[in-house]
Length: 85
Image (cartoon, rainbow, N blue to C red; front, top):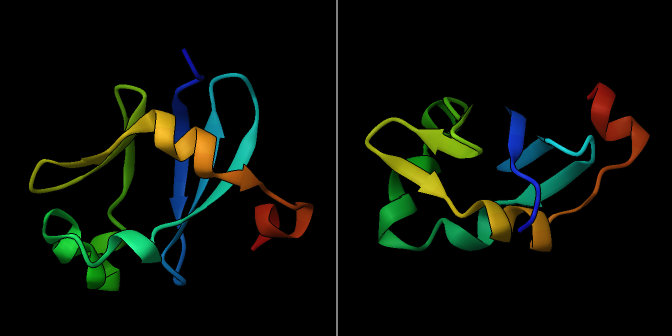
């Protein structure tokens, strides 16, 4: 089992900066997923930025969530400058 999400920052470029329970920080680009009907509300940046860490994954209102294993496995290690941005 992969680590779970402990914290999330939703950025203006439709990316998530994720802190995992093992201390790793990863960057995940949501843009490729915004074409799926379930994620359509996330196209509005104000709604996208409502992302929260909950129960080990990322959630949004309207019962939208994302698979934490995908977030971990497809996320890339964040660079130091991404932490500060």
